[in-house]
Amino acid sequence: MYAASNDYSQLMALMRDNSSHERHLWLFCDLDSLPRERFHALHLMKGFCQHKNKKLIILLNEHNMPLFITLYSLLPDAHWLHKHESLEYARRFFQDLLHKQHNGNCFSDSLTQYTHNRLRNHTDDAISGNEWWLMEEIIKGKSLSQISSEVNVDVRRLSYIKRHLMKRLNIRNNIDLFAAIKGIIP
Image 1 (cartoon, one colour):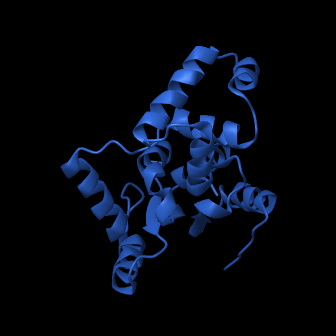
Image 2 (cartoon, one colour):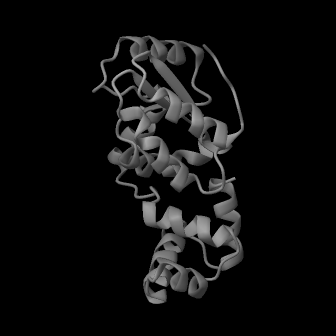
Image 3 (cartoon, rainbow, N blue to C red):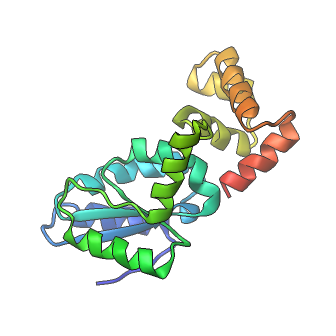
């Protein structure tokens, strides 16, 4: 059975309805097609991929690569495929996925290379869960003081997270930060 939809509520209903069934189900999730609150949406999907016959395959684009480590820590049971993987490696990914047991993960070759290069070069360009959440709140047009009052977190802590992110991304002002966030979270 195959179903494609951009309707997020329909996706949630499909996962709820099929989570208890014993039949095999693969759910392909394009990170770019999720609603603006991607972090919340992925938390909801986490339970789906913990079922024995259910597989969650996350499709990542080039601009999502800094989020890969954070996403993997959030969804350790998911499988990971780069959207622009070569045909040869994509075929190998799906063959591995067909033969994997519940406890094994599949990673496309591009993601494996990306992670290997990051570890070899000791680069720290991964975006943490807190930074990702803060970026999503900023992109909604909220100020740090507004976010602070909504979630009861000290504004100085939020400011520190924002400054740390700007330093790692080599960004000096809010306009450039907003442009970078738009590139990472379309």
